[in-house]
Length: 388
Image (cartoon, rainbow, N blue to C red; front, side, top):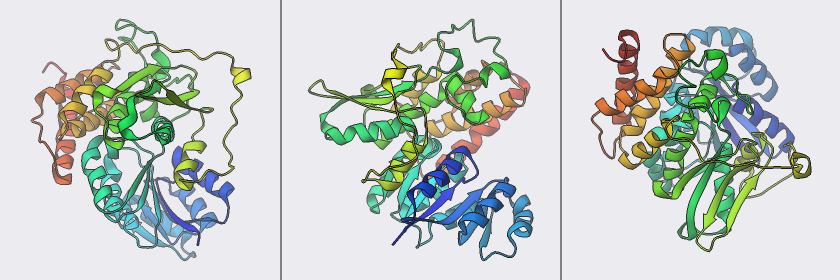
């Protein structure tokens, strides 16, 4: 029997690469459901090629257009964010690949965990916002959470060399983004064009800005805390601009196990789909002799304040991470629209964290309430001014 796969966010970078990987893997894998927010033209192309039984459009305004594009095909179209949850709960789905940007896919990811699915998490928000709740539900219902982002996939692979109790620390590597080596003064006048000029990875605008602020790495600290059940004082960040070593695990005997590869998302996507097996695939092959030198440096916590904030948020737990994520998401949206300066992103996030009354061991409803509160707070402050 082929593994039945649902891809939430199939028109994004991760979704498109996942379909490439599945094409290469062959007959052992079948697409049963796809989703997109508004890119229905590409979604329609995917539906024609892969012939899923279900397709979801989270923006209801585009449902009719998709219906016109695929009307003659035998596919059930689901509308709105609830469509993602319906897909995640389908009995015939074996693997849910979650690649929806932002917190919109959180209810669907939790639904998959409650149904005991194999859950391949590509976006950071589920484990950042609801890591404690998500991991608990997966364990309770026999589900498996497999990381798709390159850093946590690397850690997951390296940890096969020992037990969790034998881990001394986790080392997350970071490219450093476009402002590696910059000072606090250097980043005050950063433009949108500069923030979007990532030196290594080709990503969407929101994730690229997160890399520029190092918020992406801040989120990964919180993710690692829950995904690997690791205290935050055993999680470190190391700048590695070549992005060849995707992360490392140091064991108690002093051994350091690293996972290396070209900056290519196909490998972590494939490993999450084929785990625990490894098979030949389409990932680029690493040629260390051609690369020559790998370099490392410590991150600058003063310039990139997202990092120390992440440790604080991870220690606090509860609704703090939901506020951290939502405030960032809204602030980046404001920056991309030209409404605020680059440095104001972190100022707004810190404002929200300082003002928020954290609730411990939060339910999904409380996490979503904290998310909504932070978004509104950023919206008000970004228009009134941070000092208002």
